[in-house]
Each structure stands twice: as C-alpha cells, then as structure tokens.
Image (cartoon, rainbow, N blue to C red):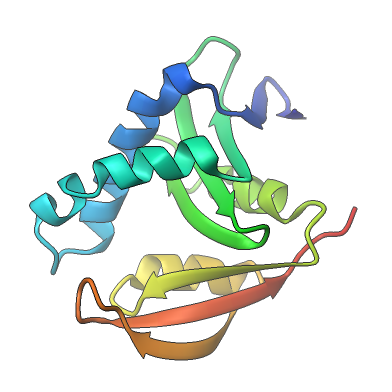
Length: 154
C-alpha cells in the first residue's frame, strides 16, 4: 500500500469491481466518442475477468472506507491494460500516482491506445511513454498505438 496524505493506493478487492466497472465504462465511452456505448457494455465480462486475473489491480481512495476514485491494471507483467480516474478527481494527480505505482518494480511498461484517444495519449507522453508502433485494431477498425515507457525498478 502507498499513502499520499490520507489518500492511498492499494490492491483492489472483489467487492470494488462494480465501482471499477462504472469508472471504466464512463472513461471508455468518454474517451472514444466514435464507438457506441454498446461496444463497451459488450466487453464488461472481459473487463471484470481482466481485473480478477491482472498481475496488479491497484485502486486509489481518498480515505479508507471511501469509494474508489481511480484504478490501474497491469497484465502480462508489463502491459498497462487500463487506467481510469473519476471525473470528480481528474487533474489532481490521481492518474499520475497510479502510473507511478504501476511502474514500481517493473523494468518497462507498455500500453495500447486508440489514436482518437488524445487525452490518454497526451497523459501517457507526459509520463514518459513514447509511440513505438501503429496497427489497425481488429475490434474497432481504428488505428491503435503501442506506447512504451521505462519502469521504476525500485
């Protein structure tokens, strides 16, 4: 567990998956206006399975007992699968703290992001991620970027 004043980042527990799903659905639909909301709803079971089996599923809470305001998942050792932050705390460093926690102990992180998701691309670039490859996403037909970043070995 990492603490930031009264706030903390810790491993998620299964009772929080409904909240993670809410944050994920909102963030996904907002970041990808060209994809219908049903596209994301059809992937909820896959999202939940990913949270259960992730190498790390870390949540940010303002205070113990308060609802989750952000989370990050890492799969396959070094792939940042998902990072979502509640709009209520956006711009307050929550995403940055989650990325720092995800980097800890890993030699590198990689992430795939759709080209249209400009907010995520900018955020990731601010945290050291660089584009290394472009390809077409089979599920959406859109350009997908692979971005990589050195981790924090400590």
